[in-house]
Length: 277
Image (cartoon, rainbow, N blue to C red; front, side, top):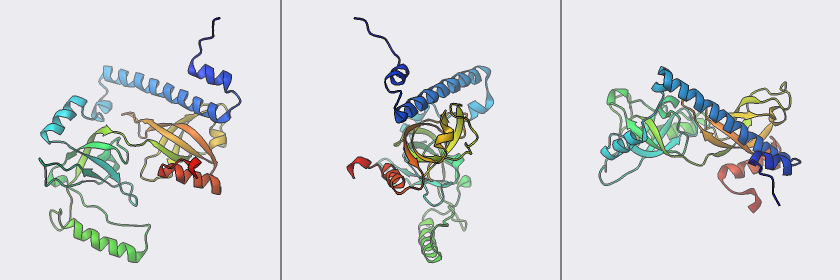
């Protein structure tokens, strides 16, 4: 007896046609793969034609990165984006016996971290002293008393690395991602999708609950029904020619604002499976 040979998409469409969660997941993955293939084709064309913008935005090759890490011209560390100032970040440089006095490196802008994401293990290149920058040390989400106390403590820490009255810190530039962090988060579609027809493929931006993460590019045919929902997204990759990383839908938690939905979203964010509660 011969059986039908089905692709994964065909299988889920045939046997799970009545399951909205399954169809949403399959559709999102398929659209993400199609978008990745299209971007890859564009990158190949850009490379063949010597596209200047693409070349400028490339990071170190794996071979160059390995040599630079071995010689110490590039350092290894974990990217930590500031919770209160998401435009600023630090790389917690890994300590070892060969570099006992190495210090953490400050990344003053999003451009300094390139396509790396909070929690990634990255390769960072220290910048010359004239390019060092000073952290803002402002905490807009805290009370005035807390801010004054924090600023006083931070100023004391800054004196260890300042180069003068400006209090500049050793600054770096991320040149590659060594190991990606957990790429699952909860987000909500930012764009107005009320006028989109159901079934129309749309590219939208989603804003993660965790402000340390960048906005995410998402392709879906269900944008009009997902506009006010909490979505569990998996980050796929970050194209060298894109402002934001691409993601696909893993699960729809439900309309934002409800107690159950928001509680489940928090559990997803902290990494605890909701079924255990």
